[in-house]
Length: 465
Ligand SMILES: Nc1nc2c(ncn2[C@@H]2O[C@H](COP(=O)(O)OP(=O)(O)OP(=O)(O)O)[C@@H](O)[C@H]2O)c(=O)[nH]1
Ligand SMILES: [Mg+2]
Image (cartoon, rainbow, N blue to C red; front, side, top):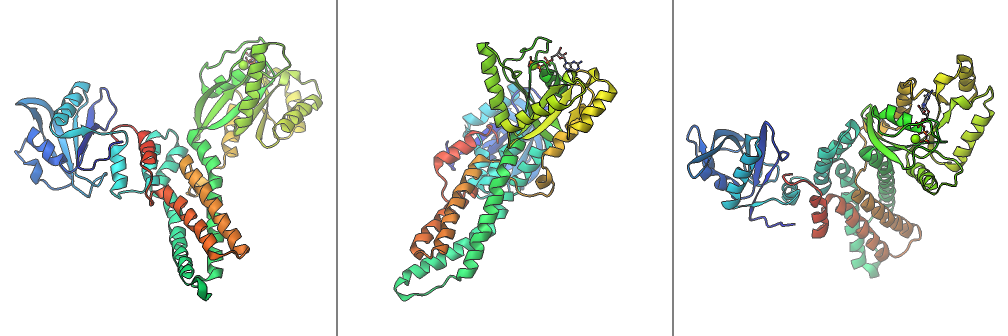
């Protein structure tokens, strides 16, 4: 990652390829001076003399040749996204024009921006903290209402606001406690121990809540994994296809059709679910099939929700066998949320359906083939996902780097707590306080963040952002 701030960078800010218009962005000290000689305003304005936040119509001219008619926006340091002088050129969206304009300025004082370099400059110039900068990438990548909401919340400083006040208070205590160390021979206590204990308890509580939110946040961001399992031929692949509205998996009446796990994402009520169809579970001598079955168990183990499908055809006036099957699955996955579904309900009489429904608690009856009962299943799925935290605008951690830092901060603050309880020497727990502060500071980038880490974070951005 190139972070020489003296140079001016350029990149296409809109997607490459043909479009109605494209936006090319320049940022750096010389942005305005570099563009000005090549821009001929229709009103003969000198670009270098224009105010910030103004728009100008004119032509980009290269050696008296008109490259394109464009609209130029000016944002002057520090009132821009990056905090530097920024020029945005809206040109016609042809790949040829985009390249001509970019090449022209590359030859005349710009350098091509690295991935995420505009946002990295915004961070390094103090326009946003690190967690907010990371959220910019999440906002761009969000593909559902839920993931979008979480990213926007973070971009507005959700996690920062949550931790800022506690960090400042902890910093104050750290200073007082370190002062005590300077007077170590004199048995003085500058830091009020009762208030300090209260603060440590509060920090522990907030950290635990944020850490707990990660499992949910991560699932919401990447799609909640839902494994569909059951015996062969119960209609798992048919259900997957019906949910996705697409013939994704092969369906046949031959038991053991699906061998490999097949998955795809579907957004229901603003929440992304990732449905995983698996091989039918049975005793088998077939090597490939048994690998598929092993995989089915693994997928179920890693899923957030399990749909367990049973075939209504098997029902013969007694729920006993069904209940036993359900019990076996519950024993196998005791900690998983399980949705039990009787499929092929079209093959049962109304009378039998009502027996099933009354004798088996929370059973969902549907026909994957006839597409009946699917809406009820979707409602059930969304109600199982706790979106309460989302609608209450609570901070939800979705970034694994933040998750790791929060965990490390929790370890450190727990050591502080233990130190207080055991009344160990102040010098020992002051190290843990510093450690906790360092991890919290890492989230927002308040401490010197390693160049490699910055490179890694912004390297995942697209160029032009
Ligand atoms: N009548 C009826 N038949 C269904 C229904 N759902 C699936 N089927 C039929 O059941 C057979 C098996 O369906 P699949 O979706 O391939 O079953 P599967 O569980 O994926 O089977 P494996 O991949 O072998 O484990 C096919 O002939 C489907 O047409 C349903 O709701 N009603
Ligand atoms: Mg199948």
